Structures are given as C-alpha cells and as structure tokens.
Length: 184
Ligand code: 5GP
Ligand code: MG
Ligand code: MG
Image (tube, rainbow, N blue to C red):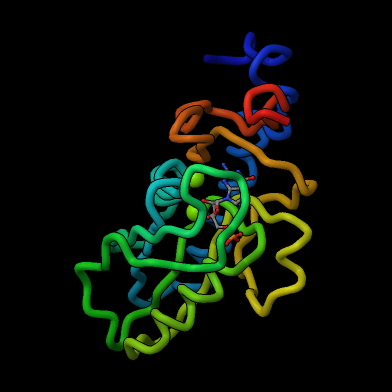
C-alpha cells in the first residue's frame, strides 16, 4: 500500500511525508524551548499516536520519559461514540510530573477532553496536548492543543498511525479513504 493506491482505496493525499516532517520539526523545537529545565513525560495514546510519538520524540533534544495509554472510543467504525474506556492504563505515577499527551488526531475532541481531566485528577504539575491533526469540530470542545501539526477538513483520514478497521496505519502519509472502502 503506497501512493500508487491513490485512486483505488485511497482518494487523495492530504499530507505528504515531507509535510508531516516539517510540522514535527516545528513542534519539537517549541517543546524543547517550553520545557527547558523541566521534567517531561510524553503520554502516547495507543495505537494511533505511535507514529507521531516515534517521530516527534526523536526530534526532541530534551530528555523525556515515555508512557502509553490505550482508550477506546471508536471501535472499528468512523464515528466517535463519546464513551471512553481505558483498555491499558499508564505505568507511571503522574504526581508532580509535566505531562504532554501525544495524539494522532482530534476530531470531536471527546476522547482528549475526557483524557485531560482523567490525567489532571492524578496530581501532575501540568497537562498539555500535542496532536498531529485537528478537525473543525474540535473547535466546539474545551480542548486546547498547545502543539498542533495541521488543521484538516472534516473527512475520515487514514495513514501515519490512523486506521480504518486496523488497516492503513503504516502509510507514511495521511490520505482520505475512497468511499467504496467504507461503504459510502
Ligand atoms: P475524537 O474523540 O476527538 O472524536 O477522536 C478520537 C479518536 O478517534 C482519535 O484519537 C482517532 O484515533 C480516531 N479518529 C478521529 N477521527 C479520525 C479519522 O478521520 N480517521 C481515523 N482513522 N481515526 C480517527
Ligand atoms: Mg488517537
Ligand atoms: Mg481507529
């Protein structure tokens, strides 16, 4: 599966590998600056944030620790259910830590809004968000993204960690899915 699938399963590429890399450089530079002299724990949200976490964390000069959480809100479909369940909790104690949540995409914002308040209740020094992608609906929630890659249109996208029924996560770019793939 690669760029040659555009026109069959994939509709169009929204962000190339190069676009993503440039944004990650900018995000990493800001994070390095903002957290200078402070402890930093990156919390990745499985599975979608795996690529962002790997590529963003390797661009940081700042020493970090890394932890992972798995939550479910979508199942295998394309709409947020609004119900968030913890499938895998953090291993780390958050008390006094500066937590930076690393996310793939903010769509409704329901998942992150829930996650931020959940993590804040554990006594951290701070909780901020870094997300590669954001859709317009996120503007209607109370979620503030401190480090953002790109705003994208309100379309279902795959690639760079994002799946449709667990497929397409390993695409190095972000693309929209052809409607016939999801029965549209
Ligand atoms: P939210 O709660 O903000 O609506 O989104 C929760 C999660 O749903 C995201 O972290 C992401 O894993 C998934 N999601 C949201 N929009 C998309 C999309 O366009 N494509 C894919 N593949 N997953 C999405
Ligand atoms: Mg996610
Ligand atoms: Mg998914």
